[in-house]
Length: 315
Image (tube, rainbow, N blue to C red; front, top):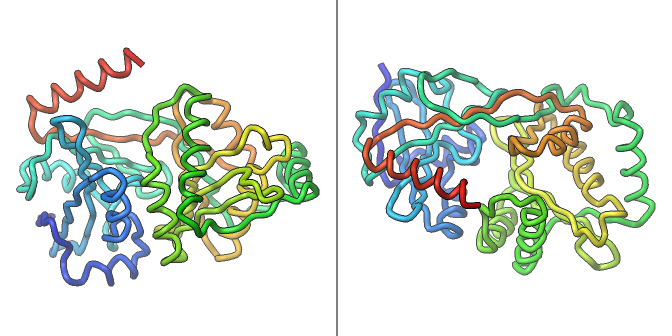
């Protein structure tokens, strides 16, 4: 029987467990990135019976506390994946801090489970057989863009300075504005990403440079033998040199060279079908990603849902 114990401090063996299972998003160092950027707290869950572990990142939204399991990809670490009964049992669990609801992201490509809970769904795209992927099978337009970027002298390198984080945030923010999206991340977050990437090979912040100008960036993370494309943006003034395509190509080829089995381009906003089509051009297939919501405290969660709806209507 599953029985999680939830604490604010990870068990003594946590770092070794994260390393063994390549569980980047459940590690204290990743949680530190989120805490630096957003002031979040972390609750660690450990089940001694099943040897399953997970990190819950708790974000504050006004007076509400919302926990995300394994932010941003979901799942747990250990030999046993999350099970429906396991998740539902958390409704009666004792958490060391007050939670109003739990969000449980479930990838369509990694131990997908169905829960009898409310959910939101968005398209998720991934190259599932990365070792069989060949760039000579890409559409002609993608191949031309890669060659164009190469001829133009676009260079790909790793970000290694704090002010690179400010530039990445600026490009990200301008992209969100153009698409009238929701600004979810801040400059502190991108600076923290770069700082962490300098200490681990499992997180990379790639820059595309053109004549000493940053033409674009892309962030990828390795977890559970999957490389996740997390963030990316390009400088519109340099878009004609196709830095974004060269960044994508470099990231996919690098993951393939490392023997990774899947390149997950993650979820896309439901109102951006063109982004899904772009990801599919790289050989990805698209399924439905679901984020379930488990109510912990009914009345505060009801108020939070009303506030969320009100905000979306006013945007």
